[in-house]
Image (cartoon, rainbow over all chains, first blue to last red; front, side, top):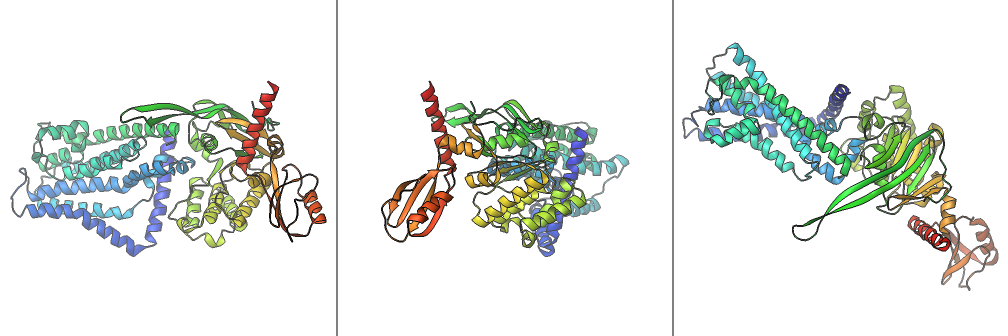
Length: 272
Length: 335
């Protein structure tokens, strides 16, 4: 039963996304301009960092290339989640105006419908921008590519995407109760990316503990990246901790799934 | 107690409700910090059965619990109490399984994708409901023809007028051959032509496909033209279940014949009607809603120089109000 709901959900997600992509492609020029805009807008933050580095040699002991590595991994991980689930923020709006009801009368899971609603392919811009920067930094950094490091690279990006994705779903679920709470979600998702673009060493220990043990954003890129870059963790956690990223991501997804179900159940008993 | 002759206790009931309740917790600001918690019984123990193939009107004043009932029947809301089955399925437990077998039209909001042309919305519905190709093509062709959708298929939903959108929505709800069709105010805000088209189509669907239809409305003409049976809900309780004639009889409601005469005349006197208002050459004659207008029109035309005439149906709120008062009066008389 649960398994068929998952496959049914993925299928529905694919159907709705496919339709939005086709409808986007009807206006190809507009799509290209929007994607380029997304590419440039999301890259501006790095321009600011690069400008900073014209005055300083390193930031928290990290070179520009290393910061670019952190920036690129954050952008790709967040970009994946944003592409797949970025429209979850509209859920509160749907609850407020009552269009949530129209999703509930269709024979497919609500999460798939909400997540795929108005799927915006232009968000590929952020992923592209992150990937370009990541490639650039990897080419300039002298990384000792052992097997475990090479393996950790894709694992880090996918786990990071999953952690951000879980945060999107969690934020969405929260909006079943607090209808105007899309900003709370943004604080953790968009706020999280801004944090992870910088080296962990520039932040206080309390904050680092918070994003390691409470909201495990550190597993998106910091902890795996420290292993790849061959740097110690400022909290003194063991070197292998970066490999826990997929487990942490799985845990986040489970929590988000439970929260989503609870939120939907609350909606179905109050209807608003 | 439910007034009326309680049709629909048939064996093959497609919709079954037994003592269904829905209680909302409403929190209200009471002063600066204090919040008052209050229980609202939106649906307060409703029981009825609708046999397969029946077309039933579900009416009542605003806030009576009509929409809440429909939301429970579709699985959008979980009932607080009682038992509820649609096609043998408990809606809130197996929402997605039920969704394949029901069609829903909300008059106030569309189930279509706002930014997409109708054609794309329908294609998506086809794949979501896994409708076999031949059924889909057959149903779509039929809807396009009968609801005049041909010219609208490539227009984004947001550019459609209310009447066009409603027709588009009704078609979307019927593409997967639902056994039950719920219509929440399907004619609200529509012009006369659109209303007529929608009604004609619904009657055809019910007659030809045997689709069971439950509709809420504010327009008594919808009920008159479509439903043999009408249920009235008030304050979350079912107060009437029977034919529309019976409802008029219980409420002693009246239709109004408005006549324009060639010149000012004293109040007309014809059997079966009474003149309730005279304004220059125009006169208003009230007669029981259960009787025909024809003999009265004939009698008026016989004795007076007639220029024009029209018949006004009673407002649904008036009929219900009169029915409720009538029931109270009778209860008062018997005790």
